[in-house]
Length: 391
Image 1 (tube, helix red, strand yellow):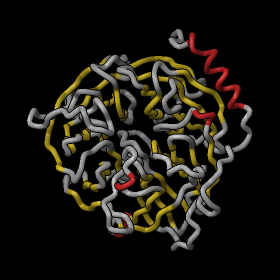
Image 2 (spheres, one colour):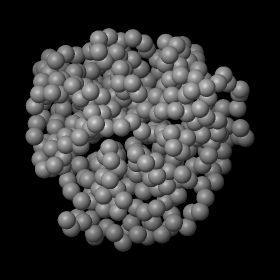
Image 3 (cartoon, rainbow, N blue to C red):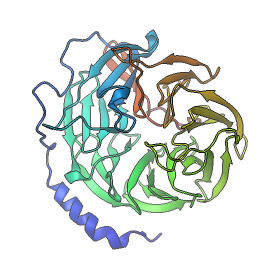
Image 4 (cartoon, one colour):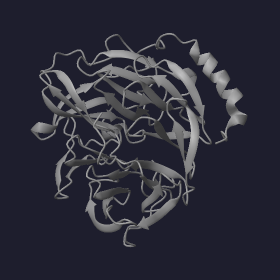
C-alpha cells in the first residue's frame, strides 16, 4: 500500500535528524534539588497498587494536585504516597497525557505536555526524561516485548518511535493529522494510531510504516480498544453517545450504536470538545463494552451481540472521560475516581487523596509487587484479553 503521507516525509526527516543527535536524556532546569522523586522512606510494596498520574483531567489541579498518587488496592484503596515529578523552573507542573509500565524494564512511563518521564517502579527514582525537540507528548503505548514506545507528538502530525530503555529517538512516523491515541496489537507487530481524524491508521510497528486503515467513522475517532483476537475495534466517536465498531480485517465500520435517548449527547464539555463520550472499555472476558458519558454515567452494552446491545447505566460522582480496568479483570476505573466492581456493577470505592479530597484522573494503571519486587503491571487501556497474554 502506498504511504499516503509521502509528501510530508522531508519535514519529518529533518525533525528526526535533529532529534537523532540527542544521545542522552534532555537536561531540564528543575525547581529545586530533590524534586525528581519522593525521597521519604516508604514501607515495602507488597500486593496490588493503583498508580494515578495527576493532573490527569485537563488542567484541573483541584482534582488531585500533581505527581503520581499511589493507592493500596488490597486495603480499600487507602492512600499510600505521592511521588513528585520534576518541574521546569518558574513553570507549573505539567499535565499528564498518558501512562504505561513494563515489568521487563521495571519502569513507569508518564507522558506529559512537554516531555516523557521514566521512573524506576521499585525505587521511585527518576531514570530519564526526553522532550523530543518540543514534539511531545500524548497518549503513548509500549510494545508487548517492552522494546519500543510509540509516543504521539502533541499538537504535531507525527508519532515519535523511541527506545523504551532510554527514551532515545529511533524514527518519526508521519500522521494524517495531529497525533493523539496509541494502541499496540497483542502480538506487537502492529500499532493502531488515532490522530484527530475519522480514520484509524494501522502501522507496521517494526518498520514504522502505515499499512492499512479502518474507517472512515461518522466523525473524529477518540479512544479505542481492541479484542484479544485482534478482529474488532470499539471506538468512541465525536457526536455519538454510544460505541462504534470496526472490522480490523476489512477496515470497514460495521456498527454504531447509541445509549437510550434519555441521556443527551453533550458535546460542549470543556475537557473534550465535540465528544459526549470519551472513553471505551472492553471487559477482559469480552462480554461487555463500557462507554464513558459526560452526563455523568457509564453505559454498559452487551458485546457478544453485533451490533452491541444496551444493557444498563451506572451513575458516577462526576463526568467520565476515560475507562481503565484492573489486572485481574474484576474492577473498572472510570476517570471520575469511582471504583466499580465489574460483575455486580456496584461502586465499591472512591479515590481520595492524602487530604481527603476527591481525586480524578484519566491516566492510571495497576502495579503489583511481591515483597518489593515488581511482578505485574496493568494498562491505561481496557482491551479484551481473550487469547491475549498480560504484559
